[in-house]
Image (cartoon, rainbow, N blue to C red; front, top):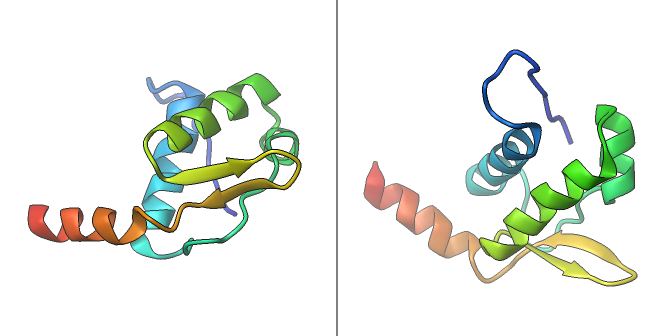
Length: 92
């Protein structure tokens, strides 16, 4: 997963992560059922705090983009990917 963090952006890091993962799901780069990196792995790769990745994943889960299964990890949610794509087509 290729996430780019900009320190010069006025946007908080967790929001940058959230929006980039949302865009990957909407564009089809990430499909329903695809596993996301663990919070610790993503934090290590991006050299940020685990708390920051946890906040991003929590936001994504609350918005219905991902599902987190304790002991297994976080996965792209199946139920909302089609609804999200349809909503984007209507906006275009």
